[in-house]
Length: 91
Image (tube, rainbow, N blue to C red):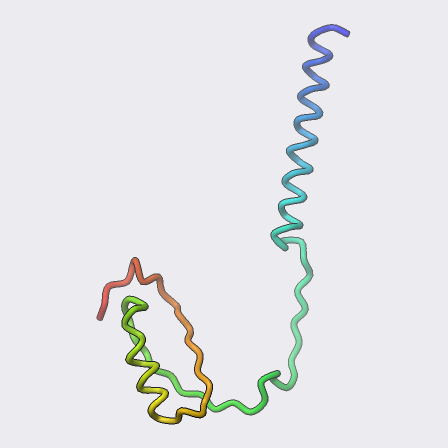
């Protein structure tokens, strides 16, 4: 075999490996995964919600949790963070 043939075979194998790696990565990341959407009864049962809004660093949300706990300590709490505290200035 001459040098040109070996070079073309090497390029073909390398291209195949790159494509295979990209496909495996897409499957691993879940990009090709099917998403099922349905409606029905929520899995958490009955839900009563209230919210408090604060803009700024995460370190300042402790007072909000303390206030919410003082209203009814038996209720479960959760938080939703929409912003990046490194980019958002305190209000």
